Length: 87
Length: 423
Image 1 (cartoon, chains in turn orange, blue):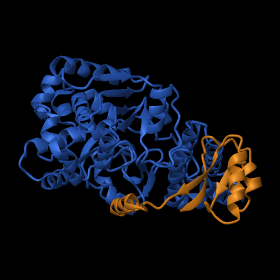
Image 2 (cartoon, helix red, strand yellow):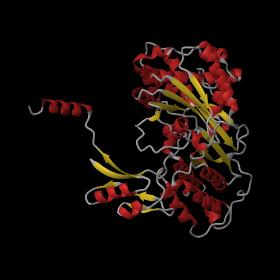
Image 3 (cartoon, chains in turn blue, yellow):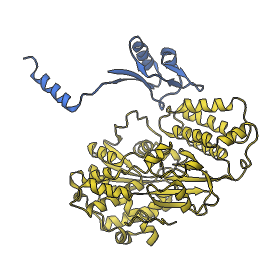
Image 4 (tube, one colour):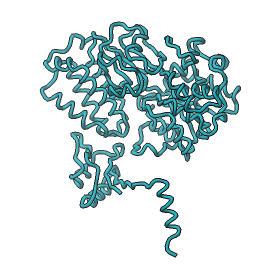
């Protein structure tokens, strides 16, 4: 599972809070809009990223969790195993 | 304009050659009746479209079979015919609606059958009454002669460039606001009401209608084989303009070279460069213009069919000046939602204009290329990316002019009448 920060460019209105709260990942272009070169967020950055997402007045910074999907076969096996489960 | 290369089967513009505009009777004479959708059980039509390698003709070039399959899985309630054709250098969708509207409508019905959609919505720009009249007449004929077809509604969104962007068009239908929507995951379908919606270009739909006829003529054959046969004879509509004596829309077999397609439109002077795809497309230099016009080969030179546009630039024109004009227009057509596009594109256009007019400052090139880098990928849709691509290829293809203009000596032709038709 990986966490990343994603900017919704349509919502964004260049308030700039994200660059203040997460400077390790967000810088501002000449017009004040966020640039994110490395979207990955882990370890000590997670809290700051969560704060940046929370504080954005336009809710334009998203903290996205990507879950590695099992193949349909693996998912079925996992389901069967969990159905048998502890009795 | 007529297509002079025949593939031996009725093609998209066959009706235009024979009848000008084909009403239902003329259409059926040329193409035969529309195959019934129930002939294509078990995904045979989708499989054939896949084997034919048909790509979307609206600009995105996405594999059509994948879109058909996704529409089926998402149980799309509506099929949208995107006949907005906001690309200024493109006229192929207009030609289709004006001369072969039944091919487009039949394609929409086939796609509706595949996804079990209950209605078709055709979108024609508010300033294109000619296209609307022709399509309406065809719709009227089908209501009488094909009453079991899914109902078709015609709507007239305002014809801004961005209004034809897929998510913007659906946004207009859903909310009356034609601006692109943020779509980080294209696998999630666009919604209209409570159901998913799928959007197709008119030429794509017309191609599907032709593929369906080939498949219907070979009911026992394997779709893979039929599709391969279709692939060998696939055509594309291309709008040729610029330094040609007969600008207009031609139909060519895929794989015809770019320079041959320009020849079809009667070259004025020999073309020294060509803009491929549209205003957000790619410039090719003279030495690249023998490239076959097909997605795969075009990709190898950094280009794509896009909206099926070719603008031929003669020696006696300044590619930088043309590109500056195009960039300015594209900047003015921004939906204005995203900073990098709203502010970045005018800045790029300004710098390109300064360069074209031979008034560069010492930091211009660094500033321009830096802005191209910083804008790319940061818009809510692909509009700014197209401009970045067009400008980058202009700087490369016209590098000799760049050097001359940087020395404060614009080329001889920088002030001449501009060729590209800016609305």
